[in-house]
Image 1 (cartoon, rainbow, N blue to C red):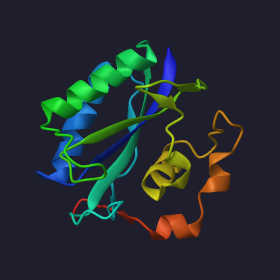
Image 2 (cartoon, rainbow, N blue to C red; image 1 turned 90 degrees about the vertical axis):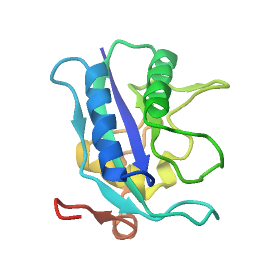
Image 3 (cartoon, helix red, strand yellow; image 1 turned 60 degrees about the vertical axis):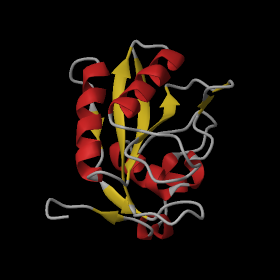
Length: 162
């Protein structure tokens, strides 16, 4: 079994419900009792495309799936929830990014591990830190060294009423 971390994001078609559905699908991929998810956070979109704010979270689970098999499963979940890849950093019903697969590092045409942009993205680092504050990345960097108040201030943690 390998512990993996997956970023979730949505800003179309009831984003909170999209993340809820994705969590149910991810839980079905997980070893029994291993699925965990962070709080949901609102964040502003990246890039220049005008679009609604995102709802983001990070999930963690243990799996026996190999990295590319897990990527295929994540992309199938996205497609099942109506994902269309029209614009880079454009609006989407669901985005699932494989952030970490144990301590594995890889750079292939389809998959880069750890995820290439995770160290710069508040909507990844803050929920990941919530789940696993003592995590050390494969490069040796402590997650706690990357998360600061400025990153936290970029997000709004969603409650039941949001």
